[in-house]
Length: 538
Image (cartoon, rainbow, N blue to C red; front, side, top):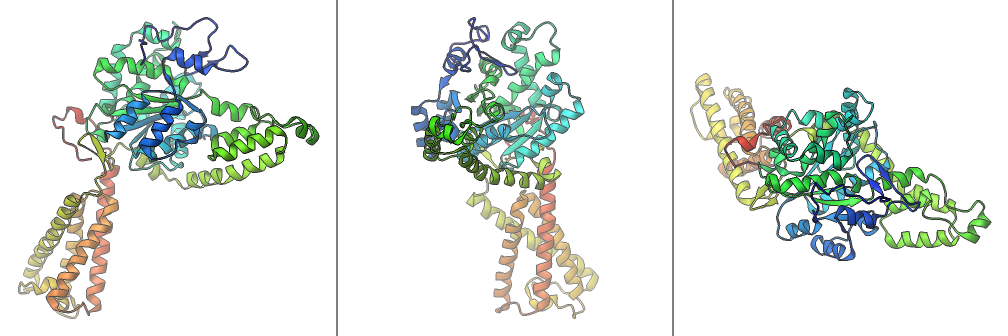
């Protein structure tokens, strides 16, 4: 964190712009001097060299919000890119203070950028909903802030974050679920004195103790040890935080504390404080001339035109944006045409988001907000998908096939005593054995259905992933079909054989998916750090 410590975090010359998490005040009509702010905060400007390296490492062009300087400052972004090159893991952390029931476009833009980061780097993401902060700072009832957090979660989910790699949590809910999270909060609190937090955040003697202790709560998600169910108790996973620079005081404090509690410093990407919200809301008028003649003569003012501000944030094509600015500034492009450009751009974005939000169910929200295993595993210091592991898959297929025949053999053995049927492989493989017209046909049918239920528990135990149940149950039945074909020297020719196996396959798959989904959505124990075992199946 440059050379700054908590003792000099708030050193500010008279006449400087004032920026903290709750207030942004400029001493100049031109707005905040971000160059001076970067120097005072000790961060680094996102320059062309960093953007070129970003493109080289990711193989993608930097996001248009990076290219246009909306995200303009960083801390240790080069460390994140080093980690990517070395195939070392990191995760994303961002948040939202839920103060309204729905999020407008200005609120959503930073989350759209975060989604792009998640897709670009294919990494886990944690999103903190600070309902406790809004309860402390706003005139809101506690239950109201919890409800607002739930509604805001729907807006965030509607953007399309990966449910297998995204955990959204409310502070009020999560603090009681995860001992490791609270333990890290306590570690941070122990390292920061009242005088220090008062100096950093401007608290005074009338500030309630809830506000004084809150910075540690916002800092704790910066450390991977706060999420043992995701990282298996690893405390050295890097964190990248995209946020407004007005949130930087929290994370300058965090970066100062991190080495003292033997954690990694989080890296940050800063956007301009409240710039998106203010430019969209404040300049809610046209920058064009009062008349067509005046506009053609003097041109439009892109700096204050609401339509152009929307294009700045949502139009990805740099060349097209530059051409629009040139034509509008010269007066060649009229305000009406500019408005049409914005309508054509934003209408599908807004419509799609509203449709997705309306389709989000309580179960969808529950999945995102339940502490759970991600479909990622830490292996050799890097994240790897567990879905494609040939040895594991072949082992699972072999184990399930053996379980299928062992279970079916067991049930045939049980029903043998009920029907006095001689034991034979014919009962498993011969097509005629499933003929319901035979005296023993119904008993063998019962054995197959009992086997379907038993086998679903085997799938649940060996596979543990709901979305893989269909694959494995179909594979097991496919191999049974091949073996039966070889045993009978012909394809199955009885309708009863096809119907019974089709129904059993359906029962197996649905039952196994039900069991796996219950496990995936279960609030699993999260205090893994004290379990005495470093092994975690993620």
